[in-house]
Image 1 (cartoon, rainbow, N blue to C red):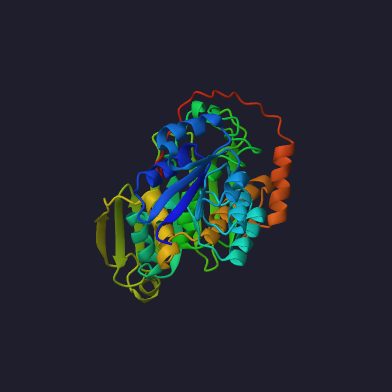
Image 2 (spheres, rainbow, N blue to C red; image 1 turned 90 degrees about the horizontal axis):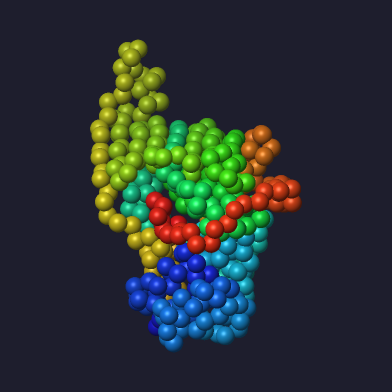
Length: 388
């Protein structure tokens, strides 16, 4: 195989962006070979954009039978991600899955089993793993520069959305259509980075406020507290109803502290580990000496194109995946635990009980009486900080 033929399923907001950069030849050794969407207007748009050079489908099963792809990008609504990924594997395709991996871990567990069974290249579209800023943070943490980890606090409130955004589609911000709000739509990248950098929590206690700032039935304001095996703690705060917002990540360890805000990374490196200094120092108020390292990382992340190029290179050259698909369940486990903790008003252990979570989610769907206004001509672009 000299070039990987890639199809895109779902050419809405993100799928159209994937199809355009593939069509424009921005991914080395890859070509756009087909697109699929159930909306005739999106197919019309694609035909005007791509002409006769690719194939068009309004049914995923027909697309799979056409034998026109080596790989597929899944960019459909959240609930169908695992189903469509598995079907791709069954037709001998390599797969990229848009975030999130799914809505509940029960279905993603089956997706990961299928990935293991079929052995195809499988990646999540976690484009923020291409960000040099977070790569630097991860390198410092995973490389032991902070020593034993103590605490991680992420305030990520720059996800502001208007009511018009939520009215732009009947599926948006509903339990049956989207499966959640800010945690499932805006924050999968943050939750993935949180565990990618700091590790998976042991248990979570959280509060999710549903429809606090918008006329929606799902959460638009969240505060979560996490505990880790080594005794470290974490706090995660997010909302779509606050402006101006903040994006501040703070990580503390035995050997120092990292603060990330904007493109600036500041690392306070202690000369003596805090735990050593505390018990060896003879003065009551003497603090450890430290060196301040400041990094202003302005290099642009490669974003979605970076993940897609890595995926193609993995197929053709065996390159290591930056965002393996089976890791998609990690951030989802965190969001499922946050939801479940809020619903039960109790601590939730990780990994979350997949059957219990699915049962409680079904109750939210079945008991919903919410009716939302829908305005179909509202513009929804890529205007958030992580370009979801």
